[in-house]
Length: 503
Image (cartoon, rainbow, N blue to C red; front, top):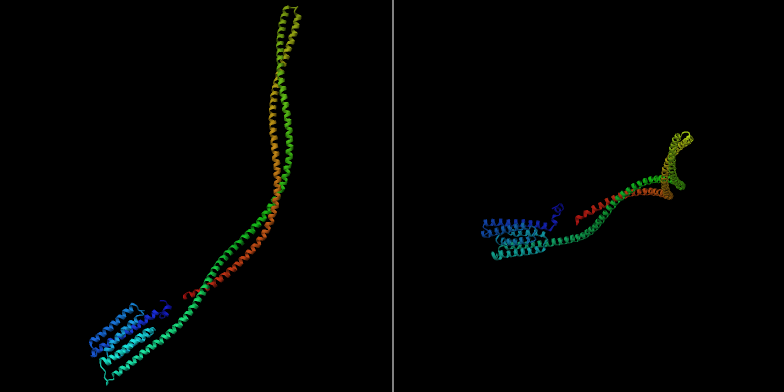
């Protein structure tokens, strides 16, 4: 049981019944104890039969035991007072009949007076009515049945007065219960009405608090989302600011690079122009070279034809030289035979003596001529051999020259083909250089546009950087406001949370 429940514990009906039942049981214990004491005393004084006394003692003990068991079993019982009242009726009935102790009748009213606190009008009506009827019955039984009526005795007057007093007590108990019940009913009705009003107000307050709490929680969630979004935006804006600053630096570098590119493009354009001129000159030189090669091819063909003619002439010369050599050989043979014949003639003339002296002279002259002819023939043979050798050498040289001329012609033809291919390549190179020059011109124009765009982008980036910094400052301000709003909403939630105890 917490402190609040301990503070208002008897506002609970169960706690009320528990305490009232316990107080009522104690009152009945005291009453039964008094009955036991009075019974013992009157038995000792001889005013009460022992059998009746023991019966009263046993009845009192039985009632006390039963009450103890019942209250332990259910201390908050609504029936316990009815059960105790029945035991009281039996006890007061026998004690009123057998004991000469009117005070016990008055003592029986004490628990009934205490039962007024139960605020049970039905119980009070029944118990007071039964107790009053029982008291009247005991009065008539003692005065008119058991002991008889004695005119001179004043006991019946005392008994009648006691009956009147008890009747008044019963009436007072009934009226007290009636007034207490009215007070209780009115008080409880007012409390109930106020409670209903309070409950209605509390329900309205709780509904409003619930709405406030729900709205506050939603607002808190929104603020948390806003705070998270603000943090994200702040971080993003810082990143954007850093990125734009980095972009600005890159743009500066790009501007410098594009300027360098423009300078390189200008240099390349100048070089391209020079290459165009060189290509044109190369084309002209190549055309001249082609003409020279064609001329060389023509000269080569002429030289080749001349060499072939020379080779043919040399072959014919060799043939003629061989023919002349054959003739020289024939002449040499003839001269040798002539010399031999002259020698024979000389010998024969010598044999002839004087007669053959003239013939000998002729023979000697013929021999001399033959010798000269032989010598000249040998010279001619030598010359012819040399001529043949030279002719052979010249023929070989001419053949070599012819072969070289043919090879030279092939080389010249290959050179001509190479020059033609080179001329084609030079033409293509010139076209490519012209195209490159055109593309470089276009590239220069596009690069100038890029430079202008980068310049505009740099200015825009500076504006974006400034805006990002301003947005970052605004997000910091919004974050501070959001944090203050969150603190206020948390206070509202704490205040609304205090109403949870009334749910």
